[in-house]
Image (cartoon, rainbow, N blue to C red; front, side, top):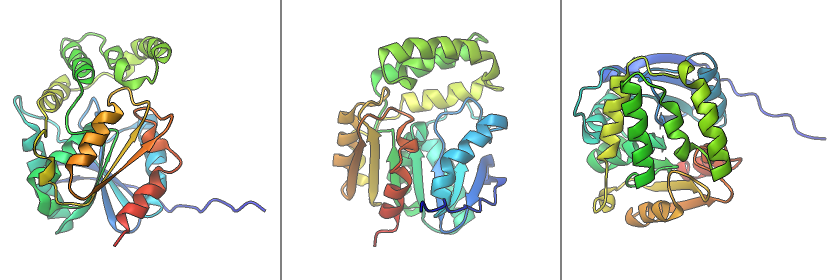
Length: 272
């Protein structure tokens, strides 16, 4: 007889950390800070996006109290990734009183790496998924095109298709789909999206990965359209106490939905 799936008591709450960082928390257990991927708005998701995020994080919430944290709204022009990491370090210390486990996905991975380099006292263990020590050129160009178009009030979402699709055929379909849904996904404050994308555009930890002292797990897919496996390997190889997992046949946002994702992270975080 098949076993019934264990029911997860989510206890979903929302709030704001110091510096105005919005968060959504769910699950129970030791805290795990989830630094969100790129989002058009620096806010907690609403509607179907909120439901989707909760579904995605539920496997992690079966073992941890997951805090999905976003960047603060009203991001100033010229803000750097180091500035954003400093805000997060102060906010996490105020909320948790000591080092905490951190999971960063995609753009959140960039921020998590910067946090671990600049503020090692804030990070107990580090997981980086679908991200690396710097943006690859095609991802940087796609994000910049998106941010500039959005800031000009034009359709912009389709510019992100090259980093969202896992094949040229899917890429063409993704462009069409993103063009159609763009009016439903435009940032309320395009200046926030532009400021963050410019910060990530300049993000590059070449030569600094060895400064990360937290035990680190790097996870990627071998069909990631934003980062190649060479970038994942370079990131893991540069961090002294790290390991790498590559999921076969998995794209950029597929890693976090991989059947092994939650269990691989749990095993890493719970290791002595």
